[in-house]
Image (cartoon, rainbow, N blue to C red; front, side, top):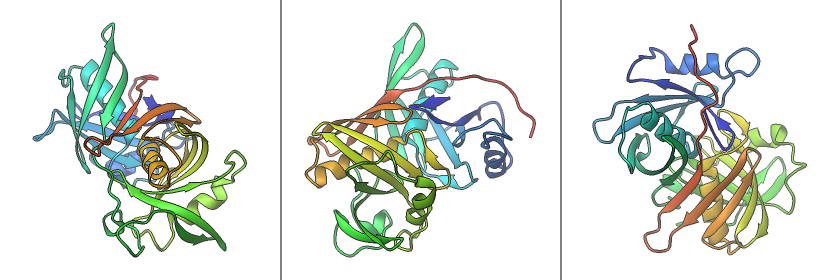
Length: 272
């Protein structure tokens, strides 16, 4: 399944137990020798919500949250009858998230996720910067100084705005951000081009997965950074390689919402 091209292998954990999820993630994720995905997500029963998602990156490392992945969790849970509530509550490693499902003809076509309030305090992201926030602060990477804004949307993000992003060699520069000493748990990095007050173009380097077609939490972090640095309004459309995501940072309660598609590509069985 994929959301805006950000694809994961999903396992119905109500029926199947995965003994070593990290190893399975590493086995299924390679695009030439596996199924091909950005990682593995297991949908499980929850004692505090309607369902629980357990996420692993392509390298087998644990992920706290995935904005595109959670939309597909909602689709799978609703369409397979694991939970038929709407709104649907999903337990993640970064708390319980609420999903509004847009259902047409018995199928979930799009999902809006309440991602909660962004975390801006560096020690909680975590990011090693002084002060109450790391907004438009200098960061030296590969001998160059970049102005970055750090945000957590349940996972750590480093956002930078550039005049042009199409020609960036993310395979070269992405790991330098991901493994920078200022990010003790590594970091997801978003490279943004401002198209207008309500429109952004984005490329993303995800920790543990490399460049991906989209990142929902990254798009949320980008929208927050756009507001904090005065570049955008609170509601923006983010264009990614895999599709578009609608983001709003609500002034009323400080919550960030994410709207996008949820698509099933195929289903099947694999022996590991």
